[in-house]
Length: 341
Image (tube, rainbow, N blue to C red; front, side, top):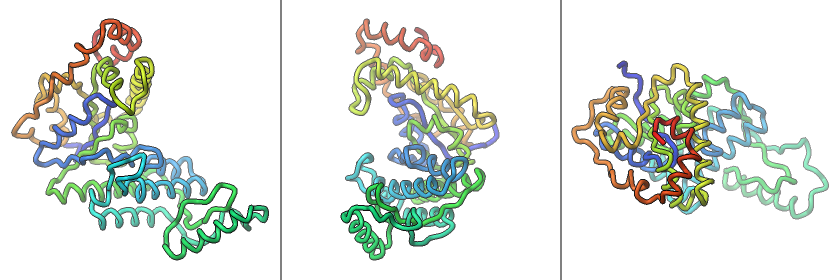
């Protein structure tokens, strides 16, 4: 097989084995597995939203808002391990403070056309309450002193217009945003003396076309699992909805979306590898062989050991009634993934 991929994305439904697969890939001496879900690729206000607002959804206000929120995501939510909704994320520490700051600054400078002081309106409305007018003046003074853009005051007040992002065509946007990803991920890998990086965020899978276009030398690895095992595991998670029905709905929606988007990949399917968690448990070297081949890598000298007891625990722990109900509720999804009822 032609060596099509250099770097690796891992995706799949939550509780399908993505974390253990990331660990297994990281056992390879040439691969650096990024130890946290980076989130900024496809989560709200991340690169996907920024790409859309700079290209086919462009307007000045949408582009400016998307860039502002992306900067907040990167410099506040993902840079402080005490903030929500991403506790324990400290990207300046993970990627290196200088590399992290320089990468963000370069990205913003390539997107913005102009910087200037102003507001969303030709003139500030005269009917604003005194408290809002005072807040605006304080914010303006703080902005000048700190040289940073602060969160806007309530919507009734004007917002500072400090940037003018430009309209990009898709190819240019992919090039700029892809360079940003490679600077961060590639830099982190090189710091560990590894030539290849691997990033895992489960919902990567639903945005395979975007990610493989963003990082042209990359592969998407999809690990899936018997939907009944996913549902059973999700009922134990604090972040998952309560009850079997809600979790069945999540699994059904996830794989319906994946079926549609997989059909839209076209030639990008050459850089997609799919295998089941059960195959990883039963024959890991055989299951992972197509992935190593796609990346032009020899298999690692030792085989990662998967915990078969954990992978199959749902079969013993689910009641007969729950097993039968979920089997019927998710019949089409179970069959879609090649499992038997």
